[in-house]
Length: 170
Image 1: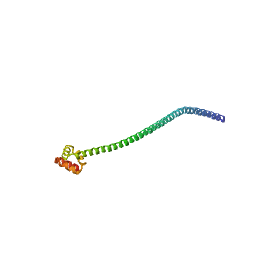
Image 2: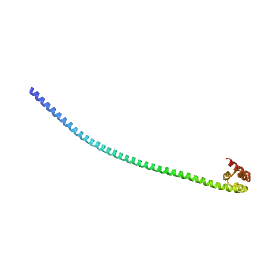
Image 3: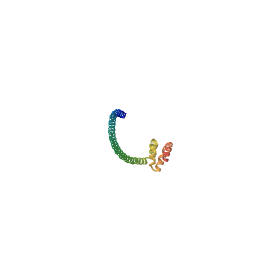
Image 4: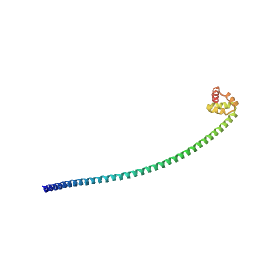
């Protein structure tokens, strides 16, 4: 009986070992299949990582190029602004000089006109000033001596004389 029991024990153990061996073989096959899937997935992840790295590099280069272009554009704008500012200052100086020259010319004209009206007879001057625009006539009268102005105004029409007097009073 012991022999039978031992034989039975060895038979069962062998069957059990054979069954375990089959299960191990199935597990190994599953692991091999899974390993190849994992390798494929790892390869795909590596490709995506490389693509992402290339995209990052390209984006950084593009960003650097754009920043450089912006810097160049800003420098150009600053240069143009400096040129415009310089030209604006030049134009302002020229305008100021032209205004001074124009004022001198007007003063010279006014002095000549004043001299002319001062030399005229009062009645003639009154006639000419009566026909002129009131503001221009008042400007001429304001450059004359008060005595001459009084004489000319007395020879004018009363309405025109009062209008010119009001303008002179301002």
